[in-house]
Length: 209
Image (cartoon, helix red, strand yellow):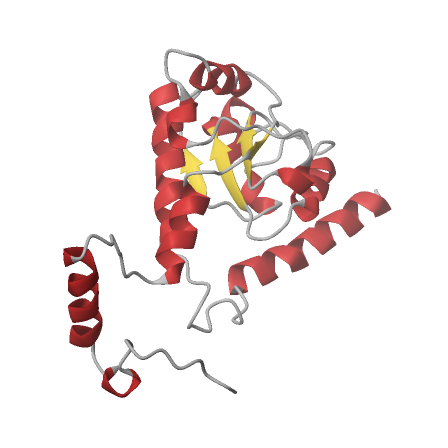
């Protein structure tokens, strides 16, 4: 591969971080503001501050979703205010409310239609464990039985402050992901693979019933 030759860059000295730091210090001293960081940090900084949630609420936790997007709490400060009505334009599903057995295949379909990387936040007791309907025959005992969940926000319903804290935890998770220079993306997530198998079995059982 042909490499461009720039006189001011000493290619043979690029063996340690001190060389980079020296060049950056010289550029900063000359008035050029330069920051040297891994590209992952820049990408994840932008992604974590521009998470677009899917407009998805099935019961009373949806009211808290509306409250946290209003002026008093202003979720726009964190870059989450761009809610999408299409899963193809969304980054995260905020499962706000009860998920019944009849609604479960719809939630799974929406999750499958989202582009990677995608995330799921379970909001409230109903989406985490079934909530007050945990002994009911028609309510899913936690959405983690259908799709993989990244963050849990407990409460019935959780206050907007808890909602924001859960989103901040998701931000922290996004900021430590790797895209370049590692093999993390090539390795399969055993949890997600197990969930896929369980989902196939669940859908087959529902079709038979």
